[in-house]
Image 1 (cartoon, rainbow, N blue to C red):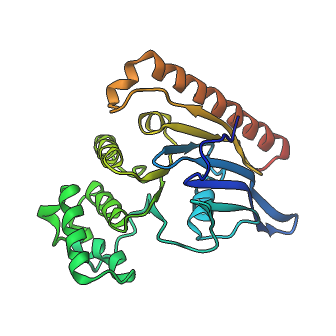
Image 2: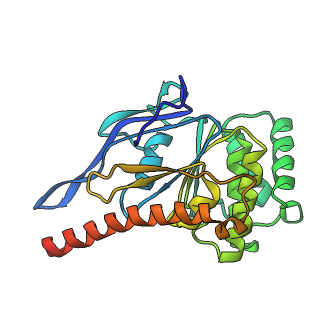
Length: 277
């Protein structure tokens, strides 16, 4: 079952959302990315999205954040329809998107300044998240002077400082090396478990999805991609990388792999038939 009743007012509800773009070739009138995606995410849930490359995972995050408009359907946050960007949902991108001319502290302060938070409160929040992320020795450094892992910590701190009920994360650790990625996964879980945030997290990594998620939504291949199946992750928390050795982990991994393999095979067959991607 793709959609389920998880409470009277879900933190996030996606109702039959589709997305199409104008075609870029004479023989292609439009590009059909998403086709009637429906999804409910409960308050404080950690929900992960996986799927074949180009299936529309990032497109869905943009629609939820109000950065783009659905071609059909609706997105609701805590019962309110999304029609534009809102502080209720903040995106953390894979690209660090830091301001090169601002220090670590200045980057964390930026969103608070835009939202006209008082100076005393801005400084208080910046201090808190700089300490939380272990960035105190680097608070006066510029982005060019810190590592990729530290840059992603700054991006996450900047988002958390705005205290959004919904945190949207688009492959935030995809550009990091394996060791830094593991550390950031543990840090994210620690922060999430100590807060009441709802998280929607996009990744290509099945291992990362299982380590982080309460439930995992698996996209079908495009065009008109949908959430084909939602897989429950019944593994105890706190969840450490050693969970990979358990039989329950293996069962979840095998199910995710089977679903994704079916979709990738469909994509390959379609491309071979059409003669082009």
